[in-house]
Amino acid sequence: MGETLLDDLPALLNGLGNSLLVSAIGITVSVVLGIALGAARNAGVPVLSQAIAVYVNVFRCTPLLVQIFMLYFALPEIGIRLSPFQTSWIALALWGAAYHTEIFRAGFKAVPPAEILAARALGMPARRTFLDVTLPLGLRATIPAATTMAIGQFRSSSFMVVVGYQELTYVANGLVSQTFRVFEIFGMAALMYFLTCTLIGAASRGFETWLRVPGTRTAR
Amino acid sequence: MFPVLQSNLPYLLQGAVYTVALSAFVVVFGALLGIVVGTIASAAPAPVRWLINAYVFVFRGVPVLVIMFLGFYSFPAVGLRLDAYTAVAISMVVYIGAFVTEAVRGAIAAVPKGQVEAAMSIGMRRIPMLREIIVPQALRLAVAPVLNISLMAIKQTSYASIVGAWELSFAAREVVERTLAAFEIFLGVMIIYFLICYPLSKAAALAEKRFSYVH
Image (cartoon, one colour):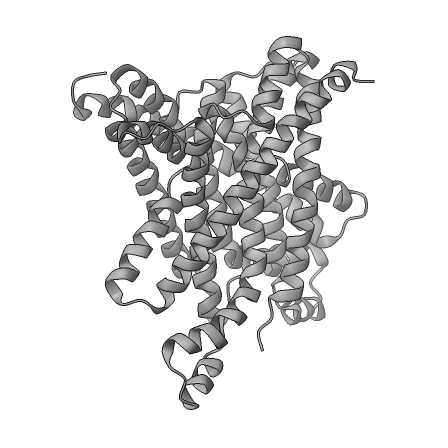
């Protein structure tokens, strides 16, 4: 809490680091979970498929904030105590996975049926077909949508302020209440979020071009 | 079953009314703002387009909570004394407006080129063409995305409680602080939010099927 923005910069950057850390873990877990659940949904595994649909609907139709409260304040009642850091990444992972599941399901569904039929006609077993045809083509098609969601997850790491995790918004809010320099500090925080989101978006577009298979399209 | 939830349900439902009212305000005015700005973006000269691009780009890259905090603290700084609701509502309208702008612009761009060419070939000018041909078709395409954005907006009103606006999430925290029955109350609140959002998500899915084809 120094005199100028320059003095506050290290604290804000530290907050940004914490935001990035918790987002990175949350995004990674949710993407892996999303691919697995999306594949199960796509394959139409009985019972499991319906259970996943319920999970997806519950997490997509309730606010992340209430999910965070559930993890942080309600779970201790049944003996599970989570630290602010654990709450933050688990909340981002569970919430994000619900959306990623739908994204990957749509991606797997968008793989041209002819490709899958061709693989099956060549005698590839269903599992090999999924791993060698549906997965590589489907995942490529989902890069834009999954990136949008990942950016959303990074932005949503700001809500971890309610459990007291020291991420960027928490740090900025603390600095503002000490210094009252609202525009500078929240402006700087907004700029940091904005630049990070832009960088993630640009990296994803580069990644997408690099991986593109001629003749295939993106999902949606 | 759930005695604490039962005795506090009227209080929570009162909070839900505030949530719905705030959401309705944000969705209606955010959509209006987005439709106007999105339409302008598709027809305006380059400098105006750049300005709109910047608006969309910046707001979509910043968390809604930061926008709420900025609005909450900055209205008093420019001499406007607003309560938490008004500050949150205005911040959210501008935030949601950016998302709707992008959806509307995308929908306008998705109207088939043949329609525009046909309109031009019968001698329609730019504004009548926009009013008669492009916007009516584009609005159909924009229904599903705008419903999805509305869904996002309803869930985001819960963050208004962080800034200090009393609504469902705020009421829930009050009740939990008083009764310590966190699991019961937050589960009840999740169900209330679910009951508000689930029908809308079904409507969005339906609209996607019904309205997303083009001629």
